Length: 201
Image 1 (cartoon, rainbow, N blue to C red):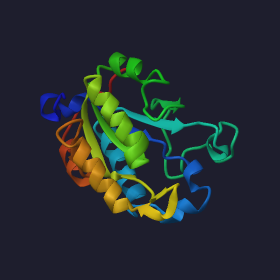
Image 2: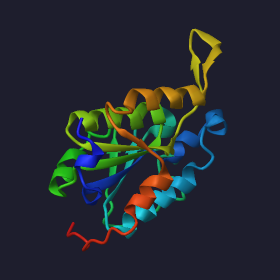
Image 3: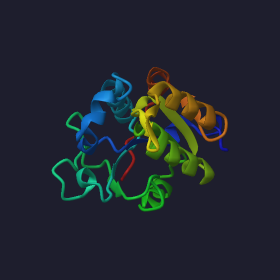
């Protein structure tokens, strides 16, 4: 694992993963974790922009009706507004790499460190963190800028894995193996004071 201490924050990009209206279809949105999710994502986007660091927005598509490209729900949530120079990538795998050209874009921009945010914490976010680490990127997993939902056992609907247990598991399996676990407040503080010439994109 490449540690974040080995790669300067000036070589970081922010990944905003699957923050799309598709997740608001159905009752699970009311059971989501992290009431500060939108505020934390917004703070990170603005902190990366202020530091002239790249922000990538990623959306997920699959055969579920709300995630189909033709669905009216297949769009970023309203609080997000990518700038013209901020890539919007569509994936059809749980990680952000194997069905996209993300890695090619990162190589082109000389990005060696990634901050992971988005939905769902233990699925697309965690999977992306694992793949990124194996590909040689240093990873900041911003735990309070992700969210998840309770998971029911399909063989026993009364057996439900709660969001606190999901978060604890994600932290335990990623920490010191695939990523640095960090909060929005800490990463934003680290981004303060970075002054770069806006790179050509």
